[in-house]
Image (cartoon, rainbow, N blue to C red; front, side):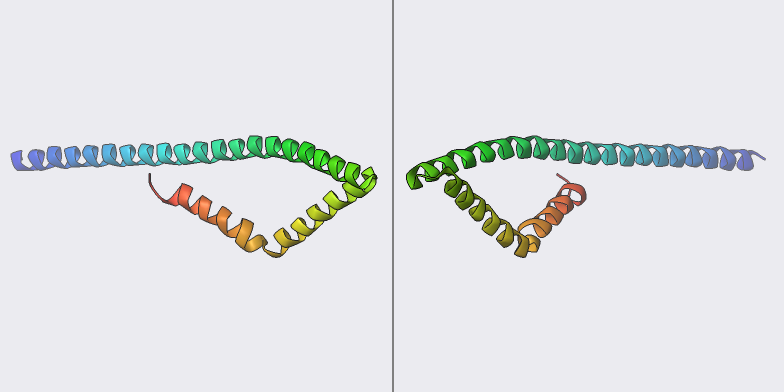
Amino acid sequence: MEIYNDIKEKTEDVFDDLSNHLEARWNLGVLNTVEKVADGISTAASAIVLGVTATFALFFISLGVAWLIGQSLNNLAFGLFIVAGVYVIAGIVIYLQRDNLIKIPVINSFIQKFYYED
């Protein structure tokens, strides 16, 4: 009976250690997931803030350039149309190259952020 009790105690100890180990691994996985999600959200928030700021800056710079072009041509509307034409051409180029300029870098950024350890 003594051997039986000894085996039973050792088995219970192994199961306790195993359950503690599994619980620790689960908690580590949850913490890693929370860290990666928080990092992704903070990166997205930073990108949004920088994007809004850059949009305002680009808007006012574009107005200034359009005004300067319009002043040199003695017609403000021509300056605005020229700047708008530059943006249309840039938009077409970006649209045609969207996979190389936007899609692939964004996918690579997500892969690097979520799958590779620091």
